[in-house]
Length: 56
Image 1 (cartoon, rainbow, N blue to C red):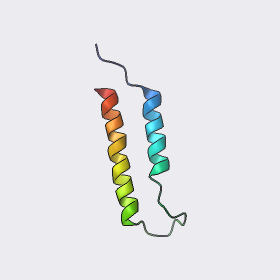
Image 2: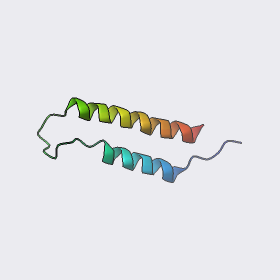
Image 3: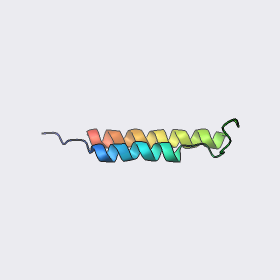
């Protein structure tokens, strides 16, 4: 019997992704930095791993 995914945990992971992946500049017309892109990549990986952990 497989366990049920923790939907609350997954929703929190998505909320954290949105918060922590925001660009460093508040000015929406500024281009993103390499650091911003690396931050998004790291956070996408963390988000996917959270989903995978819940589905295993």
